[in-house]
Length: 302
Image (cartoon, rainbow, N blue to C red; front, side, top):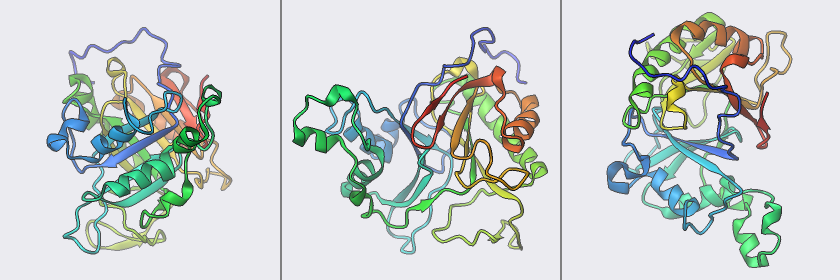
């Protein structure tokens, strides 16, 4: 554990996760960002585009439907026509992966927001809105069909706040924890993939970095650094997303399949126990639990 970090070891972590309906995880291929991620590249970035529609003053702004927008170190998928600039994004806990969002077309951002991020049902506080206004704030799944190659997420995702441009504590802890998770996951039977997601992957046989083909084994995991999620004083902050189709050791559906589990105050010495208990046995480590979310948006508390 690095010395000199001011970590809050007193506050009860349960409930310190801010509630959200969806989390957009943007694949930037970078390991750190400006304090405000929407200011990256002089404002020309997907986070800024999404927040323009969903943020304060946005046409789809809904204070009762919180969409979390964060950057990740995962690389974007590569389109067949490499001259076309695209960005990839995960939508969690819907467990969808959008491989190609053209950077030259704001229509694709509209399709992402309208087709995947808006609520399917409005909060009762909106009952007095006009039919036109209500319709505008509701999801239109047909809009999502304009996005090419959307696929279900089948990999376990380990997300670690490493936003050094926002707070030094996560900037220090993030890379250390990423390395430890990547080192320990194979011992739990999980192959760690680091390259871009392929649009049509063969999950029974994967091309590894050394060029050899091997069986994928029990499962596949991806470990990435992410931008600010709140609670820097609880570093290290880790989110584990378990895909809906994940199987447990007994071959049945994993107890946490379709869930995202947030942990705080994670140190390298805790990684082995988290993987054995939470990934292996489907049990939440209560002392580190900040909150969680189930596919469909149900917030999990202890």
